[in-house]
Length: 149
Image (cartoon, rainbow, N blue to C red):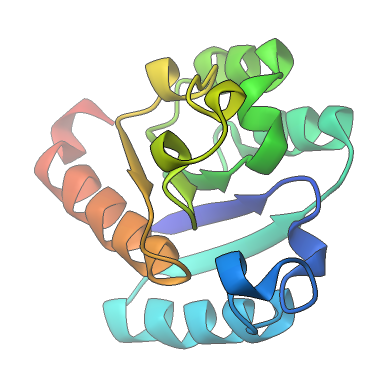
């Protein structure tokens, strides 16, 4: 089983950006933890981060026929990107949207996700644990629905 983990805009600033909201863990540290966790789960992962919407769309397109699932933290693109939403719908790969903070407790403009309607689930508010929760949930979903994939 192969899972693509995508991080959107400003996620490369983890550990620096608003540590009171996002913690002090850097993206590299988070990815290292995820690779260790994926080894425990017996799945292959690939991580990717970009601040550019089109690059994320291209990465989603490249996932077609190459990945069984996607975990995505689209970050601010959550609330603005029809392009990322449409890319996820186009490849039709089971996708989990995650957010480190609870977007429903933040500014009003963050309450709407363009991405959630094309995902199998959305997880938010558990900090860096959202990645592990999203990965585990996606793996469980894929195992339960393997005949449909």
